[in-house]
Length: 229
Ligand SMILES: [Fe+2]
Ligand SMILES: [Fe+2]
Image (cartoon, helix red, strand yellow):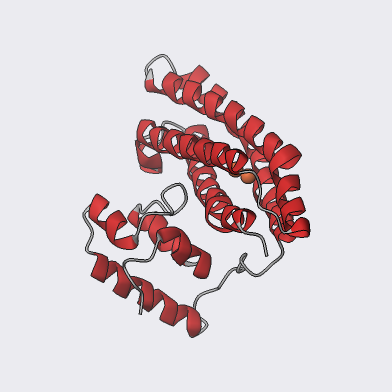
């Protein structure tokens, strides 16, 4: 039985496949991971009991082998979790951010005159790109080494360092929501050309990957960095 008073972050940490349903229902499990399922449902006008039943049905299909369970990152070492985040998420950002920037430049050049909102999208994306590139740099230079040391010495990571990263994650979450709104929910049926369609698909994938990335840091890595065992 799923308890609606559990936090979204914990629910996804327990069972990563729940993230897909939360994405579909627009329940913020990464930056908003500390809110309970009941609170999050109330915010978007969903019935928590119905969502619990949907999650249980999903679990049933996972248990019966119809769903593919991903790794439980709570069970690997902090060092392995940091390596996974760099390989799976930071390297994805290093490849995708310049590619999306180029796609945006093409779309703005071709359609920008008749669609001023594309200029806003480009400005917002470029400022997010800059912030993210600096953010992952700091994580790899300061945060992750501190997490690895915390595991080795069993002493918590400095709270100020963790809080500043959490704040940057919240800013990223806000920028992602603003990008989605400017790009009309990434609805590819409204794409102006093939490049615009590719751009919308790339932005939607970037959002999904960043939600997963921030969830793994906020809800799995940071609690362990605060209380290493
Ligand atoms: Fe990261
Ligand atoms: Fe981060």
